[in-house]
Length: 112
Figure (tube, helix red, strand yellow):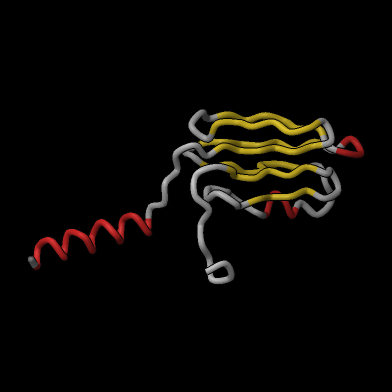
């Protein structure tokens, strides 16, 4: 009985610590519209935003980030790597957002 309880505890810990990543994609929204990209395919591409600003989006190892932006303060670049459903990086001057969608959203202290 003790080994079964221990097994259930280990499974529960892994289930909590390693959420499902199946079906997650990167949703890039810009003045040109919305485009979804797979997180399973490494890539790097440019997105044209408002006022002639350009962002470079990088996808690798199941995560995405804004690698470069022409905007003045580069807060979108400082958002870092996005890997959990619901995480986003937004460039307000360029009117571009990069968001992880699909799978299960991570629960934090605010939403718990």
